[in-house]
Length: 413
Image (cartoon, rainbow, N blue to C red):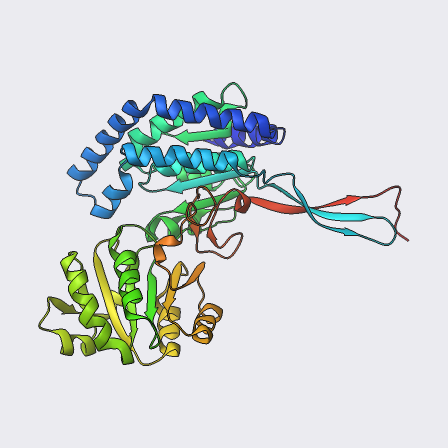
């Protein structure tokens, strides 16, 4: 296993030579090969999905696993989008011209070698590979066994696309059931610069416990939306329904709704029937239950406020003030995505300034916290860590900055 990491480190040095034209040729190759292999990709994915269903995986895991024609087309569009972005490495910025003529700038440079460990989501293979190549990083990808066949064919397509331009070890998609593989890789800090785990609580904790290199965690999305007393009820209803039901099994879906007590009845009388009609299971606090028990709602427990459902379930809580909403989010949130619905600008700004999350929103569905939607083209994930990145990670977030000093025989006195 050490050879995998060693070869990735060696390849990362070659990637420093990669220019824009060559990079774009690689992306064009990848686009062509993904289109030409559509049938084989979907067949491989069908094997994974069939096996996942037999194994009793959750609906959310299966949804994330599926690659159909529409999702494959979206993957291809992501490759095009990243290809067409401005270059992110080697760029000089923030130049300072000193009085003595010395010019000091910052330059974006690759991190080096990235280890990506993830569950389900085979699209992560392509997204991570193109972002690593855009930022001139080598990457090692270890997916879960539930996506084994899809990950494998994606890995083969990537290797075919890059082999004439850069070492194939620049992107390594590992196909192994060896349980010791991950632990071995996590020990090779002399070759691997950072590890990014993307998955459940168990995976994240295992990586934190065993990694000898820095960790950028992509943790769960326990996302909230707070409906302020000065919210537009129709707007709030549309936002809640979209955030919860548009795709319930993803990390930026709404999980807990907080409602100011002044608009509780007006909002719930309109909202709850709509959600129930869409098959949403509603778990509500005592105050809401007392007023709407005639509907198909159940009482929430303490555990509900702590749960990322990843399914069409929504917990709803009444709060007496914005401060109480902020306190609830601070207590139960996962630093992922938090949204407020209000027509009061001062209230909105207080929420933005006091809520700690990788993405905070005003009058917007939580579903927009996504690399593609935020203009990154693709994302390697959504970081809930603050070091080295916070929020969706695109190519720019996979670089670091160094100083470049340009002189003309300058010596320090």
